Image (cartoon, rainbow, N blue to C red; front, side, top):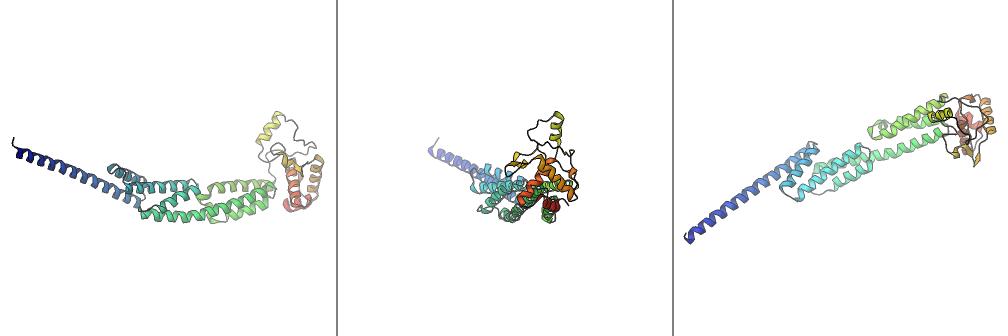
Length: 287
């Protein structure tokens, strides 16, 4: 075959190969653009899982494409922030939304939504701190058998319209349980019979039935509290002190039979901490 014929064949082959390569490149480019466009539309519609899939498909069309990777990372960070917020992991949510906000050359919609979430988180995290402080105060009052005062503190929580929102569910449930315990304390309800026994040594062996009663008891007694809650200034509260305290309760018009020995100890400890007599404490707390 003549040399010019080979030249013509070579040119034709080159044109065909080049045309195929160009056509294939155009198809890939169009698919990439379509996936990116669909991903952005999914973000607009808040369909974040679909958006992630579209950006992943865009990366399959153009491996290591920085734009597709940025959009995918930003979308995933936003979804992680939403999940953390739902799970009440507020600091993690804040970190994720901050990442979304600071991601350059990506979805302005996600940036705007992240900023909105961060504003909400600022309020929520401040409220959590405030609510936990009030709850802790109410717990301290409950332990000192200041049930009415504890409920008054809890009412500060329940009167706040924000407190019933899902963000604060954990604190809300604990506050409700504490309120119920306070109400029982004010009515003298107890899950075990009261005792006036003169013997109150915490080292006394328990019978099997006594162990079962101690396990079932929801309040406090010498078997369910640490040693520090049976002492004043390092000295064990004696049976005589307990009996004297019961007489004091009787003298101020409070029926002592509704209190266990450990309830009496707790009251004596609280009175000592406040620097007042047990009588003054009883008049203030139990009447």
